[in-house]
Length: 158
Image (tube, rainbow, N blue to C red; front, side):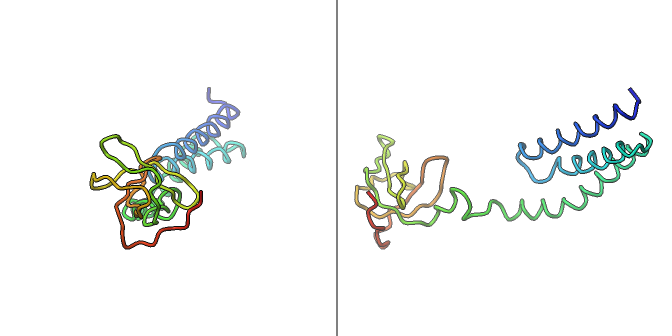
C-alpha cells in the first residue's frame, strides 16, 4: 500500500474527485484548494518523490490555495449572483401578456421577446391579455411580473 505506483493513482483520483466535487457542490471554492494540493502531490509522485514529502506538499499547497481563494469566495458571496447572466437577464424586461395571468387558476403566459413564459403576478391580481408587464424575478421556468402601464409594449412576435 505504500508503493510509489499506488500513491500516483491515489493522488490523481483524489484530485479528480475534489475537482468534480467543486463543480457540482454549491459554494465558492471549498474543494478547489484540495484538488490543487492533490494535483501537486500527484506531480511529485510521478517524479518519484518520497510519500512523506508528497503529504507535506499536499497539506501546504492546499492550505496556501485555501488562503488565496477565501478572499475571492467571500467577495463572490457578498456580491451575490451576477444578474444579466442566464435567466436573470430577463429581470427588468417588458413583456406582453398573451394569456391572462390569473392567480386563482395559477395560469398566465407572457411573450418576452420571441419566447413564451409562464407568469404569475407579484401582487396576486389578474392581469388581462395585451397588458404590458415588467419582469421582477425569475423562478425556474416561471416569471414573476408586475403590471406596468407606463411601459411600451414590445412588438408582437407571434
